[in-house]
Length: 382
Image (cartoon, rainbow, N blue to C red; front, side):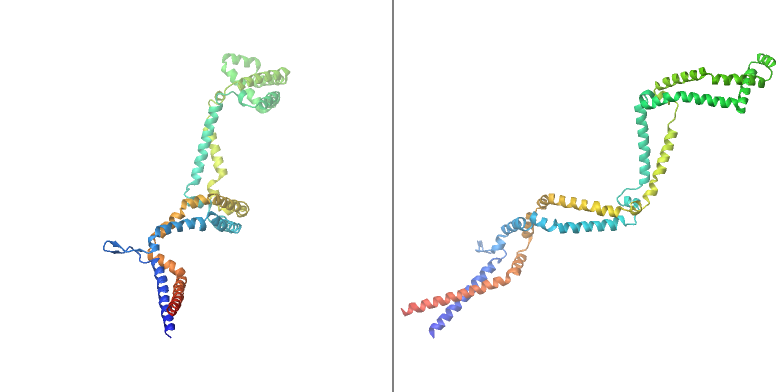
């Protein structure tokens, strides 16, 4: 009976000691939270292991997170998969369709939304500026050049070939005109004016020749005969060809020396602005201006935009992770945790396991007590 009591007592003591020591060891992981002193003497094993090694724990956690948890490969598998790419493309298509191509906002309102106002005024001002600059450049570039240098050779050759046709046309029109009543009256007026300007001599001519109508009737056939003469055609052709050759050797600034280009430029500016109708175009919605825009964006813009974003994301991923400095962030966060919070965090995860460790210590202590009791009993017998 005494042997059983001794074994029970030693097992109980061993269990208490084993369970208590394990419980104390677990507590010493966190407790005490700060260094304890008795006078100037520092109490051993203070603070607890985790508070004492918190800096090392923070560094190790940061390194573990970066090297094994939040690695570039992890992000790529999670955020750059084909499934994620398809979802992103569908989302971009939906947003573009809803907020851009189906929007009731006019193009002017879109521009105003991004801070660009008075677009019609700016565009028209730019048109005026461009036209003025181009006219100035043309004047600077071509004013000292001759027509022979500026006009294409084919144009000059065509003009040379058309001179005989021009002469023939002039003669035909001259014949038609002088044969008409209008031409008759013109000749009569010219003769009357000429004779009137000669005073007495003119009166004498009228006395001998009769009225100016008679003179016109005599002069008109001679004019028509002159126009129909082969020599007239050759003479006019030669004169016009000579003048045309002189004209080709004149510089452009000599040809247009008295020509004011500003009225023509103003007409051109007005025509361009009227045809562009900037203000009217900007008052339309994007859907009205571009009915197939949504389909185009779905087939062209969204896939390319998604591909570009994902490609750039993969290329820049490691650089972005390095710039985030996740290891330092984790370390800083762990360093900033109160020790109580770290304790709650660890115990919240491993409370059951710690209890089992305490129970295991008690069980092992009890077994050791039984073994010790057996050893003592055998020793006493011997």
